[in-house]
Image (tube, rainbow, N blue to C red; front, top):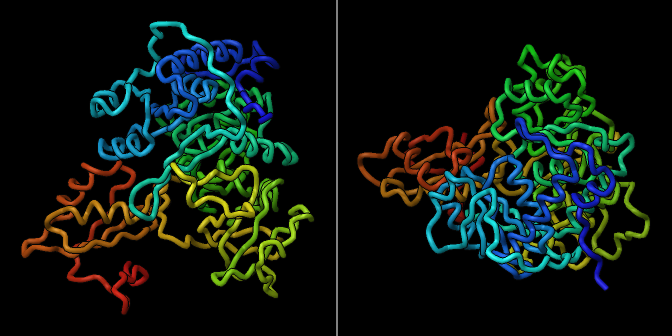
Amino acid sequence: MQDVAPDPVRAAAARRPDATALIAGETVLSWQDLDARVDEAARRLWALCPQAGARVALILGNTLDCVVAFHGVLRAGLVAVPLNPGYTDDELSYALGDAGAAVVVAEDAVRARLRPGQAVVVPAELPVADEPGTAPAAPRADQVAVLLYTSGTSGRPKGAMLSHAALAANHDQLDSIDPPVVGPDDVVLLAVPLFHAYGLNTGLGTVAHHGACGVLVDKFDPAGSLATAARHGVTVTLGVPSMYAAWSRRPEAAQALAGLRTAVCGAAPLDPADATRFEEATGTRIIVGYGLTETAPVLTTTAVGTRHKTGSIGRPLPGVSLLLRAADGTVLWRDGTASPDEDLAELDLAVADSDGTDPGEIVVRGPNLFSGYWPDGHGGPDADGWWGTGDVAYADGDGDLVLVDRIGELILVNGFNVYPAEIERVLAEHPGVAEAAVIAAPDPETGQAPHAFVVPATELPPTPAELTEHCARWLARFKLPKAIDIVAELPHSPIGKVRKSALS
């Protein structure tokens, strides 16, 4: 018999029925209250699409409606497809079509933009079912729970399939850290968007897993979020580098975060200067984590390695096996804490005479890994369970990992994945563009930003403002090039590929 999927909201309601589960503005819900709302949402969603595994798109902000709908989808045995409300009409249409969404739960502003007939579109508060119907059967642990879209090298996003078991496994792995990062008595600020794996599972999922209290922040701004943290006595912050940079510059940060015991940063590299300034302002050192959408998402953290080491992403979570692999397949380094029964001989890989200081691709294995990309599972872990992340790192003298680069061309804008190919595709569709190349450029506000180089196709070239306006019709704001240079030509290799290393 297959294991039944865990239901963290129901479990929290059983353990701590009267404890505060969520705070959103003036609304406060106990775990018992939230469980009842999730139960009703599951029935309503099942009435709309009574088919196990049907996809339900959630195009919502960090609201109670989003939390209730998300957990309702999971309880009903359906598949949640969280999407960014900031996506353009084209991006939303593509994701909804690719996922084959049967139902779309969206905020009013987004509902008005959706193309009619693509799916059943309902408001965030969910309609009452015409007939009560029957309660859906509990899903299996190995069933897909979430389809999270992450940008792909082809220029279109891909849906990473995460099972109920994978989501739960990441919490079990984090629970093995001593001292614990989050516990049941914590008040956690949920300001990272819930359509992002970090906000969804490391944030909301952790709160439910522990039966802790989550404070929802829908639209982040430094002053407002600090006021919210002060009002509710936040003890744990989960954020991206730009959030910590902004908080560290606020004079009220020390008082607002007086009760802070844990600060976690992920999704993009943290500037050591920002980390130092935040610690000086609040007295709290930031724990850095590293992961990907495909790994549910956390793989490593400084909470496991040399705690709070500047520039490091720490070591693998307990239960995650990690190695560094050279381009020829040679294993350069392997985490020494991996279980001894994992013999590298089974991988048919040579082990180099290396101390790990040579950079190599991060390759991982663990129960938190995804089941491949939608719809057929392509690109997932290999037959032995190993999956190459595409990120490059080396191990320092203490055995802590240092992230070096991306094998591909991923740009991290405030922790969100942006692939140049997607922007290049849109630029190439402009009649005044003959060729375009996009690279990552450092940005003090977002960590990185897309920088485009465009070769004009006409005698009177398009202006950067004109090209930005063109891109804005097809790309979400965070994907827009921060700078566009009009150039006579692009540097090419002998086989005709653009040499992006020569662009700056």
